[in-house]
View (cartoon, rainbow, N blue to C red):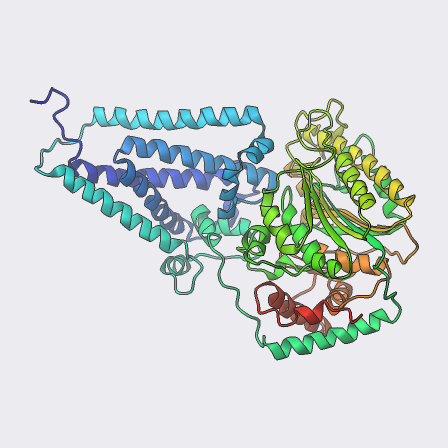
Length: 629
């Protein structure tokens, strides 16, 4: 005989079905939280981008969330536990989305979920105190959700039903629910596939997809719609006319262009020259921003050096992030603007698929150089260990293998001075000419409390910007370390070319700075190409990092293969291609539908070549990277 209060069989299917329906309410509330996140972050007039069909799309998104919540409910069998888990996961996603919007001006993507396995990196990004507070907060949210449902169930108890064999029916019902949810979610994972019914439903209900702006995708179509749009990468269709014969014609065309360029170039121009590429994390020029007032110039040496060598502004893809993408462009000469919009990070979603991926690394190795990658951080960040192997680097020096790992102030990252010393040491110990690719970490976010003497920085309204002041102080240390590196190379007997560039601006500026400067200015960072031997120099227009290697070859007066001849000709016509923006050498925006015939031909050939080298059959790889020597 059962005791009082325990007579209701918890395994009754009659009590499971009302709980399953209750998950629909939970799904709507979770989706609502995710939709409200942009309103509390940095989007201007977020609701301005909501279409008339937004509320219908919100309902469709809630159905998708219901599949996830229903799966959790099928596994746990308890509505209270389902609410606790759903609340915790939603809070975590909302927090991540809020901070990414605030810092990088972009929402979270499915690819970002891979960082959840790198606990060390996440702690470095937000700090130990924040991790502790977040953990406690998520536990509190989960417990409160659990207790709220328990309290409601006791206040409004469900009708108690006794059923013979009810436990078996309920288990069968839970298994059926879990199976249906898993099948539906698996189908949704192919959202971008042709004839996908979920994608068709979004399209029929008024979804407006914008490949050039993921921010708009999330705002216009809802968080769930934007997330699904990025959940898989659709097959990249071959450009019209792609074939072995067409690639042969393109190779021949740029073989002739290379021959014209090489008439005045030295065939041995790189044979005894070191090439050093430095991606300086978050390096930018605060004084170039309207309304930003810095107490002192944080980069005086860099500024002087840029006046006397090949230099200009680089067009950055993102703000506060996108490091690996700028590195990808610089090493491969491939523009992200020609890749599918869902391919957020080629380092994670493209390069590791291949044992070998075309880049400047293998080309220089074939020219006699030894290729060394240096990154004073974990090897797994952006899968660099796999990517560098695909590119062909012989050595990868990272945080645990560097000979010097000094930090400055309260910074948890290895200093730029230590990173530059590793470059100098590598150049000294190698007998062959070296190609060094350095990606620094010193100026990576977060900035709060990093240095004891931050620079004084004020915004357009005169308000102090303490985080920017901390960031600017870090720039002064980078500037000094760069001065020391250049002086060391200047006195070296070995010829060396240095390509130095910042990957993006930090995401610490307030909305008032964005409003005072506009999109183009907020996506520009300094770059220069310097050498310790005589050669041609010139100021450059705003340039994509895909052109850095052909600029280095120009500075060294070295001969070029057909691939870099194509890039050089493209640079003169369209030096900037980022996020659907085409700029000519005068900085004027180009209409892709009204291009001069020669520019259209160059873009056609470049698109064909990039497809061939990245996901195509690589018909032209050997010919494109052959110098004919």
